[in-house]
Length: 249
Image (cartoon, rainbow, N blue to C red):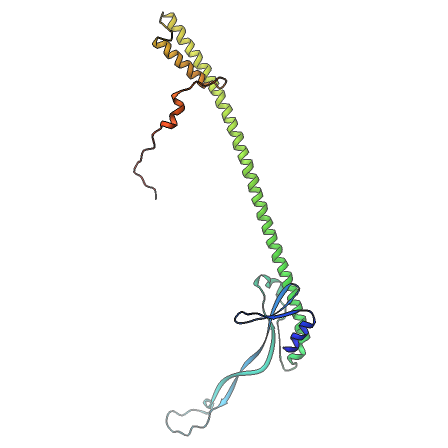
């Protein structure tokens, strides 16, 4: 392990141990960190029990005269730990473990292990770049969606404003036509009353009605000033809605 750390640092890689529990050994290269560790495998050892001359208890066959004990095997292994799951796609198929075996010792695998670290770092870097690009594309897509929504809302506001202008125009045209019809009717009432010899001056009841009717025609006509009316204050004096007693849950 000491030789491995010296080789890593000689190549300009930074090696550090985390403060977390359990701690990790990390090597930094290519803008990424690669965790690795050295471990010793365990093996089962059969130890023979001591002789038992007691005649008490059940008889035990010879195969029961051994006990199994888990002990260190003396076989060491270097392992590159799996990185962030986002990068597993790029790290698939990479060798991660080098161990003592019948034909090789671990100290002779350091060059291959270093090559494995470089390959893992390359894959992790590529995965990191892929994730960053995917995040950038998602951010850009979200920005475009928000911009399109903003443009749509702005256009919808213009459409509504234009529709309101059209509705206002049509309403003014209808009111202008209604005021013209109303004036014709008022004129017909006045002429009919005069033909019957009735008084139509402003002091008479009919005269007062004709003046009031003229004012309503003026109020409908969008081309003339609207005379004041009590109808202008109807919202001010409108009673509040009655409580029906219903409660919505």
